[in-house]
Length: 160
Image 1 (spheres, helix red, strand yellow):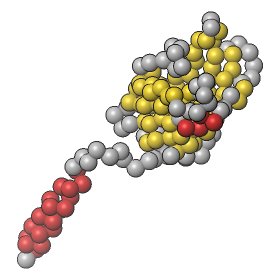
Image 2 (cartoon, one colour; image 1 turned 90 degrees about the horizontal axis):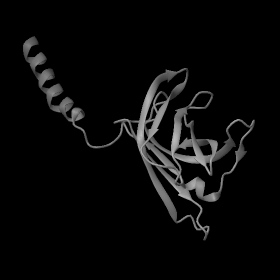
Image 3 (cartoon, one colour; image 1 turned 30 degrees about the horizontal axis):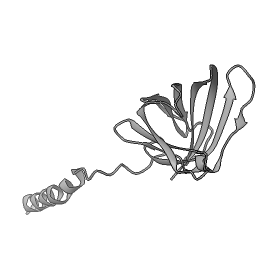
């Protein structure tokens, strides 16, 4: 009798448990310890390297920008640019890879290696961190050169 119960439980586990192992193409549930998921831009700041302080340069189109951290360590950053019509119809997709530096107390941080440019300018020193933020917020930062001058960008994101 005990063996029949064990066999029945084993068969049930194999039957129903096997469905959990199948990949359906969806990302895992969001975690406070991981950036995986889609995020929406809430603020853009820029500062000239070597000069103290940054300026909030957020425009309406910036608030449409998103970044998606995939579980395979790739990213897709869709940046909306203000065009001459100010209609937010222009965007650029910037891809790359994210590398986790590990979990930090209450969050996550790491490095971003971009595959393309930001508004036509090469991106360096990319990274992200949720340190000092709540579970649903993080900061992405990078450096770029515009007209021969280096700028640091800081973008705030909220989980979508």
